[in-house]
Image: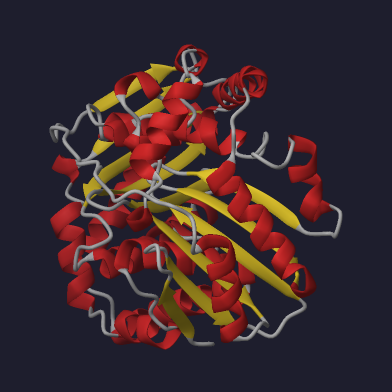
Length: 409
């Protein structure tokens, strides 16, 4: 895999560049400004800002922003998470200057016209209602609010119709002043350009932005009180979720947890949950496990949707798979296969230039560096069977589990 070069602009913005032979290039901006950074009355604000970044700048109207890259076959987009706002662009390598100019303008010079804000509130409320119509999606957000109850990191990124209605331009400016600071923003470029050209042009468009020093950091604070809850919101299937709190991305167990999750119910069709519950017993078309790692906290969960008559059986089978991971260390061949599968999945993800660009921006944001693929693979290969057993026993004990079930009324 190509080496990533890191450099810092005069104003403190950290940047990463990976040279990749292609006719296409990518830029990603990672801003450590997500829904957990919102004040109590600002629920949904980070996502609201992300929508409105494209509604006008000091030199462009919304139409010109949306057309600038689209006119040359490129793409400009953004998304919000609990901890980040990611703005990214993909374009032909010949349009590098055009893309840099546009993405820097959008991130640092959006004007948030009042008229556009009011229109976008209606769009986001429709988005909220659409999500409420889908129990299989809604349960993931509701479960995080359940397991992290009492802390902003558990709140739905979209907010509520009522909270969105209450958002103002003043809220946007306050939030950006607090979170869009030099230490909380990173830039990543992937493409066929030379390092010297990338450094010069990134500095031209980003190096002179005036940015305040960071004075804000969100901290996690919520009591750990595992419980089970049943809600009557399903339509045809039951939707079942069980999960456990884990440490965040800086903890020494994070790689063992990543591998453990991949073995249990990752994206491959031969995951333990998939092979046992879906293939062997013919229960639960949709079944997976997932691991969400934040700065200072995380969670590992299992989700499945099935016929109401099979819910308890499916839950019991899932619990058995977790118990096996706690009690039976993987054999040498099993462990080798699990590592090779995970490393292969990582390699496929890195082949996508946009994924590589976003990944580098996030790595720089959280770790201050971008590891090579070989360095990460080496650390995955260093995981032992005992490491997996230890992680499973430390975090996945049934007494520490939160359980949420959506049932048909």
